[in-house]
Length: 287
Ligand SMILES: Cc1ncc(C[n+]2csc(CCOP(=O)(O)OP(=O)(O)O)c2C)c(N)n1
Ligand code: SF4
Image 1 (spheres, rainbow, N blue to C red):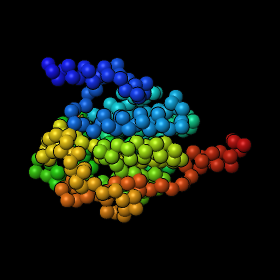
Image 2 (cartoon, rainbow, N blue to C red):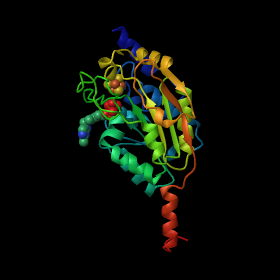
Image 3 (tube, protein in one colour):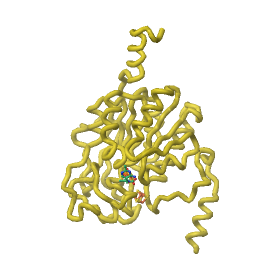
Image 4 (cartoon, rainbow, N blue to C red):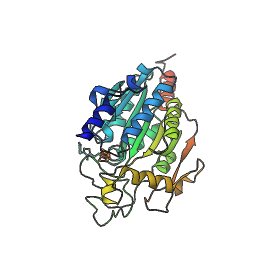
């Protein structure tokens, strides 16, 4: 009873970013200790402090706990089929280049089922932001392992340890030519919101891997049953190194193995939209 009362008070209290949040949809679906609320907070802070008008921001999410993000942000938002938010966002940006299109979704959605769209959008340097929430597992559907689950980590489908090597996502994105590549955790709130703001300014594919606590899913299989267990783990194991050798930033989630964070790549490269316009000009379709 006391908990319900506290929840009501939290839901009814005001926040300076209320206009950017769909409060009528609260309480949200996320578990206690989940990192997704912090990701939402950082995203609305980045929107509010960006110099891009609010009605130009668009969010696209796929399916999963992380995929519910689009439902809570009070801007034009799209909740699309599993694995397809990047494809959807690419199409929208091509038709409406004036929009600031951001994909926020999970690791399962964006690089396991949706991995093909991820690599091709980066290869083309489509001008969108992709903020991937990595909780190392398929949270919503019962904690199966996916392409980011660390080698040896337990899940409902790997009770004796995951037998696969995970993606090293900053290395993958950088190798494909992304002009902006960063990684932060939900403990690093200020750096994460700043990185999101930077990403919004980048011309081209801007990628942030957000390491996020999932105490109810990944944590329950790997002895981190409380949100605070993750926060403590991040405090003890994260190292910020903007110039890190990206060959060495794979995550094991084993105590003592660092999680390397930073804004790793910041460079300029012609975007798909620039190159397409050049072709149209040569063909005489544009002046
Ligand atoms: C085509 C299709 N396949 C499978 C599913 C079932 N499904 C829904 S959410 C999900 C996992 C999402 O995992 P992730 O993106 O990591 O998000 P999380 O829930 O961990 O935040 C799956 C497999 C689906 N909805 N559609
Ligand atoms: S299952 Fe994990 S990711 Fe999903 S809401 Fe719960 S803590 Fe968050």
